[in-house]
Every structure is written in structure tokens, then in C-alpha cells.
Amino acid sequence: MNDLAALLTPEGRALLDEVRGTDPAGELAVATRLRREHPAELVSAALGQARLRQRAAAKFAAEDAERMFFTPNGVEQSTRASVAAYRAQRLKAMGVTSLADLCCGIGGDAIALARAGIRVLAVDRDPQTAAAARANAEALGLADLIEVREADVTEVDTSAFDAVFVDPARRGGRGRIFDPEAYSPPLSWAVDTALKAPRAALKIAPGIPHEAVPPQAEAEWISDGGDVKEAVLWFGTEPGLVRATLLPGPRTLNGRGLPNPRVRPLGRYLYEPDGAVIRAHLVAEVAEELDGGLLDETIAYVTADAFRPTPYAHAYEITDHLPFNVKRLKALLREREVGTLTVKKRGSAVEPEELRRKVKPQGPRSATVFLTRVAGAPTMLLGHPAG
Image 1 (cartoon, rainbow, N blue to C red):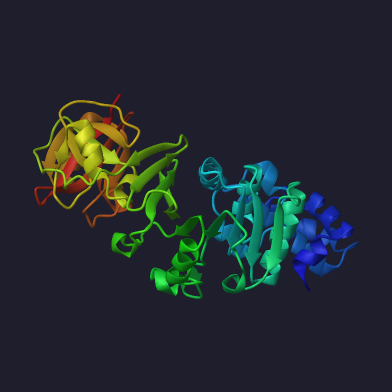
Image 2 (cartoon, one colour):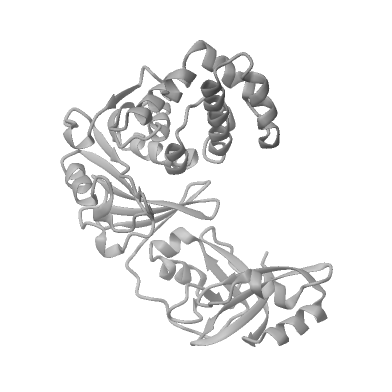
């Protein structure tokens, strides 16, 4: 049975309205009741779609997710709406009015592009996925701007468009794919396609090695709410530029090719750079802004003597500096009456939950402990958010 086709019928749409918001604990009772009047397969499809919509609310606005159609892979691989909207606005600012969205999935990026006023050809080779993208364009009133085509993206002529966007599949039967040439389609094909277009954007995994970035591309790492979401290779912008963009905002830090920051003694403040800054290798730019340096040449923590608010790093005032010693930390936390302990680590093999179990924090106060290295030595730093 084609679940999506069945759900697009009047009976299927009515069922979707009826099961909206069904609590997982009450699903069996709802299914039993509905199967008295509807085919069991259709009821199962409606409840499955309701679950996918609930999951999708973490990436899409709730009012959109409740109207859209998803596949399990589509929910997993879709771009978060805030990130898609940011990219769409960048393309709009470049003067893009038409774009070929290759490997469009269930249409999340196409929706953001269309809402920015860009005409989109959305292409995916999977029939069910393409059908979901088409249904989503219609459900959100964007069918006039989004044409969905079921096809192999390598066979699509993109010459008539101002720009190309490629989002290769980065998951396989065994989970995430880390080799860019194992993407589907491979990164080399996506780059060749991008170089033929006036403008292009390629969505890639944020862990891509910098040496894999082609010299013709601008590389941008994007985080949303502190979580690194993706990297984008831009073509037709500034070749060689490296950027870190933080959402909401956006706030963008451009690389200036600075050398690695100096290593210096611990100051009063510790700064934890945003993940996009770290992935983009722009810790040196943040350290310069803060007049700071590194605690260890291999660890992306910046230390400084003064408190200077920056959107690119979280600041902590350090109160205690001690060698790694669980018993000493436990005694110190008991003395300070710390019951709420946030554990952060970088360069340490100790798991945060394991440490919490051992120190058993109790009391009305809160603190943050950093498990890291200072000049190569395992270290604990205790402090609290600054400012």
C-alpha cells in the first residue's frame, strides 16, 4: 500500500485531522476505535504520519509540521527551518530568482527558498520522497513556485537557473557517511555541477576536513542555538573565505588567516567558542578579539584576564584550578554547597555522568566544572557563567 497516496485522499486527510496530537500512550485505543470504520492499513499510515509530524516539529514551525507530509528519512535528513531560511535569504540577497534544488528530499529547503520569492525546481529520484515534496508545496500554498520532478539529479539540465543547491545523501544502510566521495551523489560531482552554475550552494557534513574544501568555494559552518547543524560550500561568492555563522541572528565571523593563538597561563575567565567557530578553525579570531590565548595548544578553550562579551563564545569566571582529582573535587563541591553541577569536557576521557555519580553534588548552589588539559596536564577548572 502506498501510504502517502492513501493519506492524500479525502478519507486519509480526514483521518489525519482526527489523529492529530495523539499521545503515544493512547495510540492503541485510538487505532482500535478507528479500525471499526476505516481500513487497518490506512489507520496505521495516519498514526505513523502523526508521529512523524510530531518529530518534525523540532525542525519546522509547528503549524507547518501539522500540515506537511513526511517519510522517516525525510524527517531525519531535513534541514532545520531556521537554517534553510538563512540560506534562502543569502541566495535572495545574491540576486537569485530561480534555483534547481537537487536531492530535495521532502522539500524543506525548497519551501524556504519559495518563501524567499525564489522559483524552485525540486528534484529527487525516490518516488515516495518526491511525492511528499509535491504534497508539501501544495499544503503550504507554494505550488506555484515549486515544481517537483522525480528524476536522477545527474540527468537534470540546470542551465536555465540562476543557482543550484545540492544536498547529497550522507546516510547509508550503516548510518552516517563520512567520506565525501561516498555521498550520493559524490561531492566531486556536486562541485562540478556547482562550477557550471552562476551561483551554487552545497550542503555538506560539518565534520568535512578543511583540505577537502575546493579552492573555488567559500566555506561556511552554521550553528543554531549553539548546535552545529551543517557546513555549506558557496560558489560565486568569495573563493577561499571561511565563515562561522551563528543563528539566531545571524552573526557571522569571517576568517582572516590568523596563526594559531599563543598558549598562556590561566586567566580569570574561560571562553568556550561556539561549535561553528571551532569547526571553521576560527578560534584564533575569537582569541584576538578577547586578547586571550589557549590553555593548551590542542584544546579549543580560550582564557583571558578580562570579561568581554562576545556572541562567538560563552564566558565563564573561573574560581578554582586543580589537578584532576575526583576526591578533591568532591570535597570542594561539598564545601561550596554545589548541588547543580554542569560538566563540560574537552581533551578528557571522563564521561560527565560518571563524574556526577562519583562526586554526588548536593546543596542549593550551582557550578560548572571543565575537564580539560592545561599545558598538557589533566586539569579541573571550577567556575560559573560570567556576566
